[in-house]
Length: 261
Length: 379
Image 1 (cartoon, rainbow over the protein chains, first blue to last red):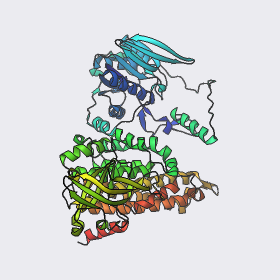
Image 2: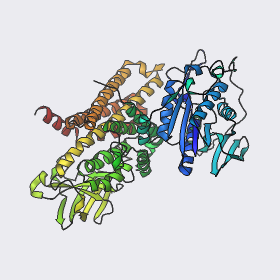
Image 3: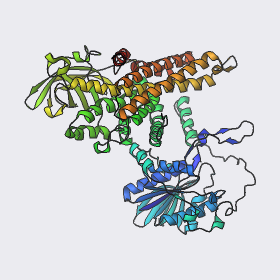
Image 4: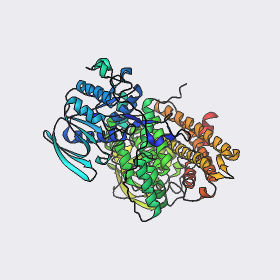
């Protein structure tokens, strides 16, 4: 079972403060973390490897410091990590990003499954995963909350607003996973030491079989005209506990899990 | 001179901090209040490789160093000092003498499960009438064929009753004084080995200290650690390392007091401004921060010495004395800064103050540290 996991290094939104004057996010000095949903994807991969054997390669596209995120994935137990990094990739929108990452996946070689988080907590587009599948011409299932493999078939539960749908797909497949699929493990001391000793290769545009016109700013048809806060969706959760203290504790936990506070 | 940690050390600190904040901090107050020793915490730390952090992989350890280990104790204690001492006793006082003085067979049989974290360790030296005067203990071990028969009582035994493996000191030759003491590895469940009362304490209430009772307890001669009569030397050299653990524990407590004081003094408003704007408060925090930083340098240097095979007895004594005094001062001032809320159990600083006190007492009182330091510098 060869698995590729896509991860993105994102700013830790729990640490982001808002500028009281401009209402803009102050990103300076904000620590970077592995996108939380991508950790769920890696955890899913680790569990599949425990059951079916194989290798896990973690791939990230980003600036050189994204190696830190890959190091954390190695510490959690990934076998290999690759950083896809080149000035030529800067300004990439989701299309150029997925095009570049798809080329990197071809270079990694044979793989049975690609796992992604459902979306990144900074851009929140949820587009890169599905677009990779399109570029590679393989099947995809998004918002997956359960994965079971038998022979060449994978049976998944796909979350939707009302519950979940059960789907069966043949390998190779790209799955994007939701938070509820698992609780990502913490790295061990041994894993942390191993990660520090593992070389993380950096692939540039020259290492990939790509059309340079489709990379970076040039390859990005998306233009951001303006950004705004979308209207609230009418969806609420009622927390009922014995005491106000317990209820507040759970509320804070939920908000913190959702990276809102 | 280089004050920069290696990426490896940085990552270990980050990893342990994440674990401590996620798994220990949220329950620390409750475990203190209810005096709960939670074994699952040690199982988790075992799985993460924290319990065998400085020992080689060939003995089930994580293959890191003693500086990373000291930082791990600091981070764990920053969240929960009770867990910090359990960890320090396991790694420094039980695993280390087996690593240092044990035979290959003893290491495979006892160090491996300790380092892998499947078994918990403890160290029995102190007796009701032998505290600082550790050689005055009345526990005896009499050779009988292929075994020794132990009789006596140990007190204040951290992890006692929970630990599967104990390193126990007993006189094999009473007339020889400190040269007649020997060390033994004793397994929980050995007939004649039982547990007495559990201590009820002022601080570190989520750690467990019990009385150990040996009544004609037959221990295989193969479990003699080092040579007969080498026990006192083993105990003293083990305590040198244990002091680094306690110093790191004190450092973690002091760091926590500092962080709480900074946060609270910026949030608490009196007379229309945060109390941090008053120099009376700001200067207390300045001194606290300076003491914590100085303590950190002493603790890390002692740990560095141990990692690199340099002498560390004096360094560990200095680190232990300074860091524990810094922790006592920082936590006392933290309670002062919090005022009435600091005295209340609603806030965490009174727990820090109760936890800090023991760091000036155990692993050799701070007066013993002064004896070691003065003995070394006046030599």
